[in-house]
Length: 165
Image (cartoon, rainbow, N blue to C red; front, side):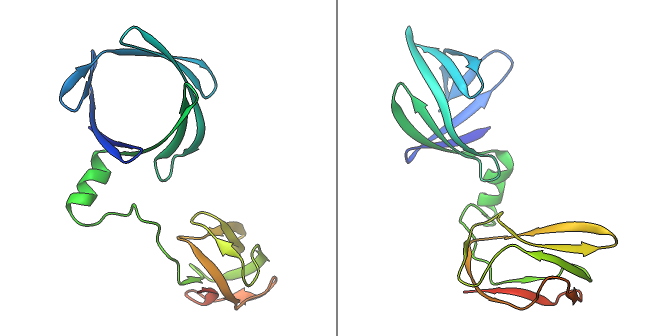
């Protein structure tokens, strides 16, 4: 089961081997991929051209252009729905407070500066540990308040490396 939110309207979608069920009713449609990111859709004897403009698979959000109209689509699978029911939803953008060293190591490079705005998933710094380079990314949105380390500096586990506002 999926829940799709399209321009603030919610739809329940179920798919089995033979049909698609939309809000409890059979949904007779056909679609085919025409090229990378483009699809042809047939529904109610009408043809639609769909193009994926943006796709964020981590947050399961998409921007689609269908016959020159733009739609914002968010999708939740059964695990997201279960997390919502348990009150453990992670759909809101989280704010990051600081970045701590996950292990002792050597700071290879700092990729942000004080005052930079960062989004979840942005690369913050590279930490070398056990002869491997680890790319440390933002776990949420924030603005860099201070940088507590420099390149070629050794850090200990749980040492604060970057603080955010």
